[in-house]
Length: 403
Ligand SMILES: CC(C)[C@H](C(=O)O)[C@@H](O)C(=O)O
Ligand code: SF4
Image (cartoon, rainbow, N blue to C red):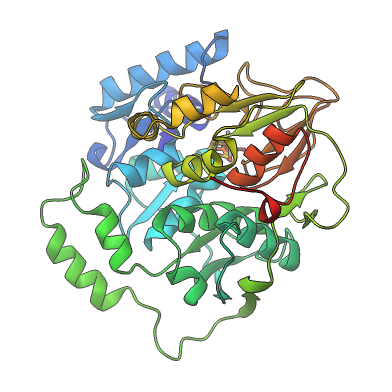
């Protein structure tokens, strides 16, 4: 997968190789490459426009058919939704949150620019073998405890370096209970625990999710038969590390600091009014996330002084949400209803915080200045974000009358 930030850097390497007389006049297999324009959306500045022109030249020159344009959505939302992400495949992208695709039982890794170039030219990659790390999720989540609360709790407990050198396999009843979208939220943040990737063995939910999508292969049912047989956790599998979390003990989470492990329960000291609310990103901007957020927004109004926006993860999510009337729910409550893209997740486009502003955000990183210099990010689930928007401060959604 190639996107508008990491892609153009790769193309520069291609140019350099050509100058040295090394022929990179074709890709090993253009049918295995696809492109999305997501990070610089809305593409208002010069660099972003230039990058998008570069990507267009790239797909034209190398015969790449799948090119999703600005506004079509985030690379990690599009892939699964289009049936491009498949179990048992190896997926790479110059983007750390490639781990999202592990929810389908793919080995999905974020890689560096020169590695991307190597993959484009050879369809291979040299890797140190990571250690297997099992994270067992047990118990039954309360009705307002989301996959985001589960993964924030895991990271809070194992730390941002807890997964270093490993690939995390999430398993247990707490994972099989989750929908595919919830599993994606969990795998998405594996990288925030320092892991190379995160994955979940595919099951019937996985197979059902991918059936009949735009790029689902024709021989899909045969593939499913093989996956059912081969892509399970071996009985007696051994792991280099193991961690178990009981979800019945989890409260809604709010990050307070500048890395995702700096997180606490909403019942601990979470001060603060919020100025902005961002419901979006490849972590939490799928249809179920918007349905969840709408439960707190429906029939209420965004608190005075709060600026709240919803950025669906893809055009498809947006359309489906609109068919359900969710756009009206959010608009009537005073949220902005935006076009798809990375938006205020990372401050690389005009959607940024002003210095001193605090944001309740459904994204995955709260690093200093992540959403704009001088801004502060508080990571929460979609329903927590919407509840903060209508209350003007963080609240415990378990005590709220949700629709
Ligand atoms: C811009 C891109 C390389 C980056 C990443 O690698 O994750 C971005 O998507 C992010 O979330 O910080
Ligand atoms: S939504 Fe955020 S985390 Fe996801 S790919 Fe875009 S910038 Fe990275």
